Length: 616
Image (cartoon, rainbow, N blue to C red; front, side, top):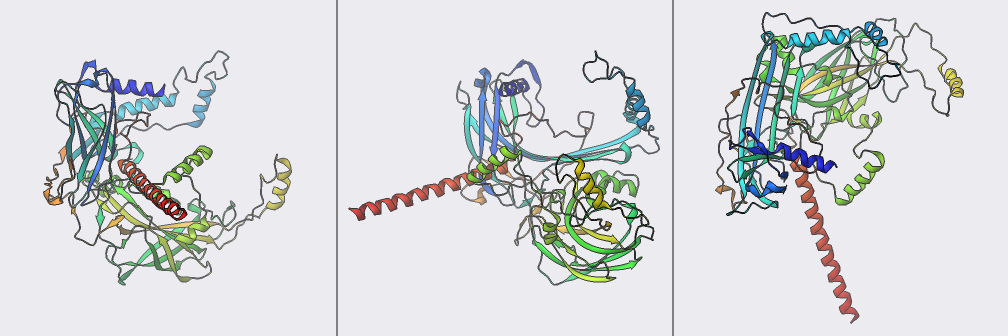
């Protein structure tokens, strides 16, 4: 049933089209094109200097498929950005406030218990919903806003895979190989989620940028029109210079001034839970953190373990003592092009970076909190895939893991003595492998920083008496259905975290000691190309220049929050949404296992022949 629904969607979506330029929307006619198309590409992630084969797969089914007379594969990279800001001097409509009490009173009058009631829709909208609708309608007044959008079509390359002869059609079930050649150029790395957006303060604006780096098929019809089909999503891993091993360091001082009662209480796993209570002493304490880091741009190499000499000194107040310090490197996208339209320094910073608390308050041991690069890792063996599938069938997930703070501390932080006014420790941590490197794109910059988290404990005492908690829990355990539902816990000292950031640079997962590739924003940067087959030498390849034109977007059809997200069909039946590099890695692993199996079989046959001769 699902397959039929998918086929129907494909048939309806691929309407017969009037001839159109590549990349432009085809105009659908009233006659449906009765041919369901499924598409795949498997190809390695692109890197500077890459020269490799790749594979394309096409399956076509339907009465009109016989009209397919040409098949080409294309690879393109485009990027865009858009920003919406309040026009200077305008006053935006007042945002309605949600009133919980009034909403509850209205909801109680809607007859939720009516015996004849069917469904969950309300017959009337609440007063808040009516106010909200009026507000949103007023906010759509175009005179309130200024909007700026731009796009760069970086490159779009194609190679023909098949062409029909005479009255025949192209093969309707086919796998064709082609070649990819990349000049010495650095294209941007891509995040796993290649769309970045942020709403500005209190719905008063919007800023976003997005990238599209995909393979697609262009299928020529007998009537001269073309159909374009997505076939997979690619990725690029740039090259950077390795972090230089040098004894040159510099000391960076970061002041951390934090009132403990103004932040959410933070509990360390090795301690018991934090009890509520108000500390009556002066709880303002300032710490100075001195860190020895690589001099200059503070370059950190991705995937490398580091040991940084760190001095912690209490410079003001005595209510808190340091208990633990940890470091974590991270990278955040900054909307630099959009921010250039801000009317003030504050507005420009808000557009570029948004609310930094999302990054600052992330758990320091949560590796999912770091921005990872889109990159195909080593593929699992067939046995590992089978075991992972069995585990996923049993547990619902094969990727879930949990690590406690003890394990994190062993790899990323150092315990401190809370009684010392000053102490120097060696803090070790590992910059996550595959962390998004520092990089500048046409519209966005990836900025890297070292997050410093200092945990402190309160040295003052509470005015509230401590309860006999263990006795309470012992009594409560006689009123639950199973033993151990409640477990005694020792009252813990309060623990708080102070946060600080240091700007750094992070290298790409791939480094080179050769001359660095040309950055793709340079006028001299060259474009990757697709070829029908591998050339005998790289010198035979002619690389065109990248397109450096930045075009202003115009009209409602272009000025949209997102134009590259084409929606999802709930299907795994083709490769249009797949990361082609991961599919390629599985092919390479399969070929490796097949070759190892062939050699093993040859060795076993040779041993058998020797045994036969000896027995004879």
